[in-house]
Length: 270
Image 1 (tube, rainbow, N blue to C red):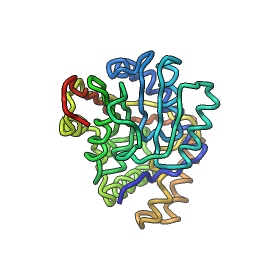
Image 2 (cartoon, rainbow, N blue to C red):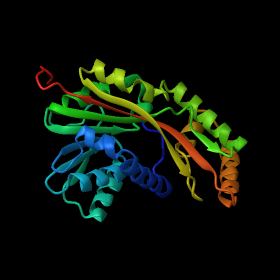
Image 3 (spheres, one colour):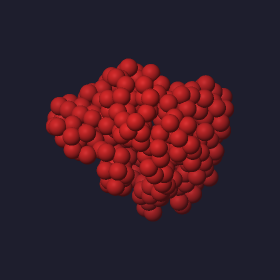
Image 4 (cartoon, one colour):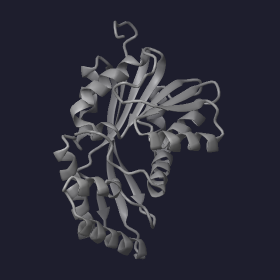
C-alpha cells in the first residue's frame, strides 16, 4: 500500500512552513547547484501545501516560474491559498500523481521532489523515471528525503520514542523504505541521470511548543492500520502536552539527504 499518510491540518501546515524556512537557509548552495536561480522554470512534484513552492517562486523571480503538483486535493487547495497570500504570480499548482504529473516532458530546468519517495516504496523508481522525463537536456532533478529510522528528540520521552517506533513499523508494513535518503543517487542513475552530488546533513531544531513530528500526523492512519490504538494516541498526546509545558525545550534531530542528478545534454530520453 502506498500514498501519503499524514493528515493535513493547521499544525501540519505550520510544520511545512518551518521546514521551508529551514530548507531555503540550509540548502541554498544545493538549490543554486541544481539550477533554482532567477529565471528558472521549476516543477515541484509532491508540493504539499506549497510552503517550499512559494520559497522557490521568490528565488526564481518573475522571470521564472514554479509549477506545483500534488495528488491530494486538500493540499492543492492549501497551496493555492498560500500562493495567493504570497503575492507571487509566477507560481501555480494542480492535482496530479507523482508518476503521472501531466506536465510537459523535456521542458523544466529543475524538477524538485521533497519527502515523497519515503511514502511510495513500491513505486519509487517509476516516480524518479517519470520525473527525469520532465527535464530539458542539461536540466537537474533535485531530491530530498530522510533516514526516518534515526529521527530523535533529546531529551528523550519514552512514549514519544514508542510513537516513532510504531511509525517505522507502519511504513515497513506499507512497503515503504524510511532509509530512502541513502538510495537517492542509485534511483537517479537508474533513471539515466548523471550524478552531480549526493550529500547528507542533520536538521537540528529546538522544538517550539505545539510542534509535532510527521509521526503524529500519521496517527489516524496508524490506528486504521492496526499499528496503534486510540489509547496509544491519547498516551502520545499526553506526552506532547508534557513536552510543551517543559521549561527545557527538547531538540529535534532529523537526518536529511539531498541529491542532484542532471539529464545529459545529448540523450534520447522522452
